[in-house]
Length: 488
Image 1 (cartoon, rainbow, N blue to C red):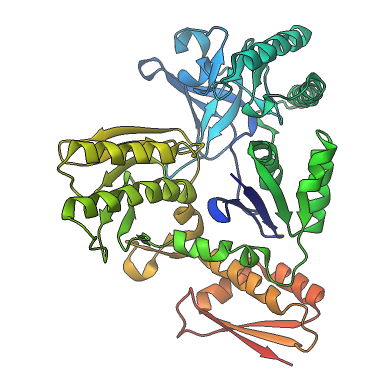
Image 2 (cartoon, helix red, strand yellow):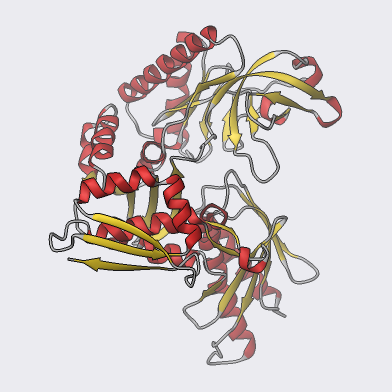
């Protein structure tokens, strides 16, 4: 499947969009004011051991203690086959006051602190170094027996160098020994530098930070079939060229610097797709639709025939709507990054054969999703229960805040999101020599946010675009609305 990675990199945020056949399927947003924690490695202290729950709490210097389960001590991933495992009771492994090295595997969500693992891993393009786990593993997605045997032989040879645990990623399939060794050497050097920092750090704290969004996507997705990478920031473009050059000089040709006048996300249709991804109602091509309700405890998705009346009988109309909805649901779960418990309310079907076809369609569509999913079939109430692994906030919670106009029962775009939308809109007029001054009218709360949090960036944009930019408060405007007035 033809895939394109589009990177919109700005001072205030980095947005990375993955397109498959020109359709947006994944969107990652990292804001400079945010702390992206997954992958970070910390020196921590055990503050509480709970044998009855086979878990412990670790102080890593953050506001909330990190949670460590015994499952995150024994196993690194469900997607990897290992040569043996370790089994013990958590009270035999951890003691209160003990210093421990941990890595964040799941972001803090809601009132919960981060989830951590003692199985430290450092990811490269083709290999994952697991220095705390003296064993080797191969991605289950590599199914060819001869290739698995080749990789196992190489991993054993590399393992003998330092007894570091190693995992062959899916991307390692078919990669020559030379590149695998180079990847290993880079990771081993990174681990050595981390240990030096650990010895210098006398108390708990951060030892290692995961790479930024653009580098992480290049590392994790490029090798899975991305044919083109488009980036609109020259500095980022140079860094990515340098990064990819460490592995494969030919891959540098895939990276393209975007210099169009229109914002890159506009050119590739991503902005429009983001708008659709924030709507509760999603229309199907047949005229039916699905409603997506995201609650704290679960996600509920309801399927309706809508305007679709069918051409034959009622059962066929329902089946066609449900089959179309199954594919759209899988797509929306991935795009919106919805996770946890998910309840699907398909239109009732009397025939078991029809229910089986809908389930098969749903499971086949979910195979494209990198997040782990489990589908449990139709219940007695005619509902499909499923789960999707959640490691970060959903797109809605990332881009929106609880609505003050409906007492938190719905969502509006946050002040920060509106602010950044305005900044992107300003770029459309940035290099027009006839425009000397730009007036932007916004809700007073958004204006306050800009002058309190983004004042220096506004000055930077004025200097770069050689224009005067003025923000005026208009209490008649909803905080998502704004008006731009251009003056020559």
